[in-house]
Image 1: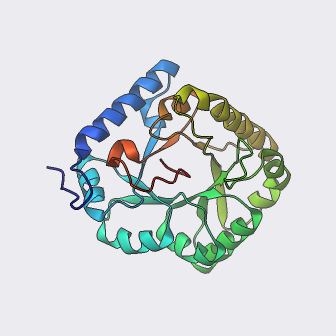
Image 2: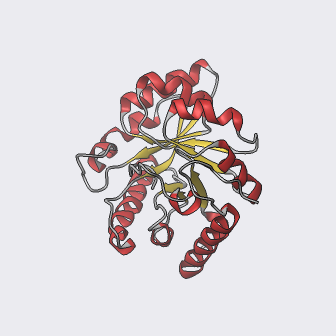
Length: 245
């Protein structure tokens, strides 16, 4: 039985929500001839309590994403040990040490300066940190992320940092009520990944793109990680759309 979140939050059937999302992932994979296991579902747990995360872990969900360091520091110790955590928010330099300690991957690396700080902090803990580089695919002034041309110019310097591993790219396209309108941005990110691979001479296995309303389209265009919040947890009161929905 899913726990009642109390207060202003409605009761949520986490198992049912998870099954429905998995069905959508499977259907999208079938449409383009992909294996279902090629897509990782990242449950965006921002602002949701440990009880909700426990319910999802009980239902079979393992991967979770947080975008605020302070919230994650308080929440993660209260969650099941089998839960695996990725950071998906904008990372400030003074929070890098905590991010390196708390998370197994940092998505949304949007500058060479932050990448250098991650490498420095990872060195101090004898750790190598997997990262995804965030790309501002639409050139929106309100969003973080590399411009594609700047990423290509700095990619070799990023890749030379000793304690990071570039696993791929991530992006948040402009919000649109119709999922199909996100497709050109997903295609652009996939094309940029190919350009990066050609420049590095090595594969980048991960493309993190797609949220509750459009992850089906993202999978059709090559997403390997989809970040889903609302469709799993229900609506938030302050739904700031950045790395999640």
